[in-house]
Length: 397
Image 1 (cartoon, rainbow, N blue to C red):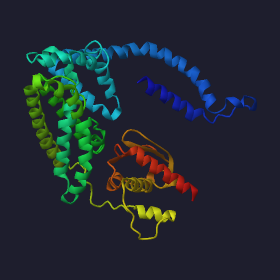
Image 2 (cartoon, helix red, strand yellow):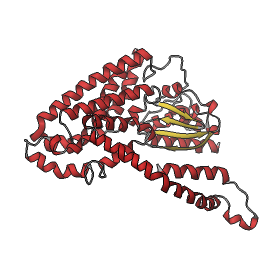
Image 3 (tube, rainbow, N blue to C red):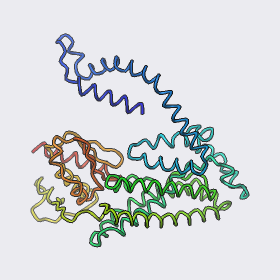
Image 4 (tube, rainbow, N blue to C red):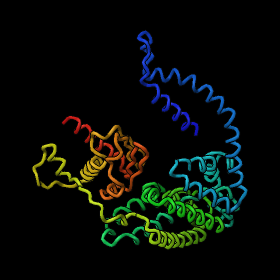
């Protein structure tokens, strides 16, 4: 939170004063150096305000953590809900970090405490998991990542238009496997988060209910990630001693998968959410090919077929994105995060609608003023590299 505030102030100062003209004899202090100078004097009162305000914020955080810890199974549900619903803001780290790595639930954090107690749990089948480690109930979001992601993907496939099912399947299989195996859900979450925010909230509620059900079964442990994490921390070391309980928990998880499918399918159809495969039919996008690009460079003759490797596909995707963003002349700069290509444009009115971006294979579009976020997935670093190469090539023409 502090980093966000400071970076916001620094950005504001830069945008307002970076081109301030100083007398010639002070010219060495112009530009960024001038921002550093005035930033020092601005940050002094900001620091004083933080000293006065932050203790109250910290008290509220501590009270919220205390409520979660004292509310039993309901507190587990509250924890799971906020850990999921805050993902779009990035503030979900604020929820789980004090529990997992600090002393909010147990001294040393849940991960360290579970590693210490693991040999004892493996050696004695009579020990009840929840009785031995009640504090481990809060590493539960992995149940949503595994069983919830599967249910969401099945519902998307079932509600896709018949002629688009194959394309939707090709989209969903890799992102669903990524979520289930590794616990990285952003590529799947962002396929519908901005299209249907209400559906994402329902997803978070179902996840909270699933975590509460597992807690009522007495299943606790390190269940924050995907199947690989669960195998490492729980199933492999403890299956001999607690395998029956884990088997029941997996069956309960699959029942919740079915619940996800039923609820999502009903809501998608009833409210006609434009989830993958349900986009409007009137979207017409001229897709570029690798051959088109090489022809543009003079490296391939018109009509000549070119092999489509992964590298080729990313280059084609990058050129299609560039076209839909209004071309090279409309681009100010480009960066990326874990799953999104972030582009600042000069004129957002020439940027194509979201459906056009989905038609070329991306997962969606977020527009915030002149800032455009193209949701691509985990391949975004490679796509950005191709995108930047196109910008450099165009600038040379």
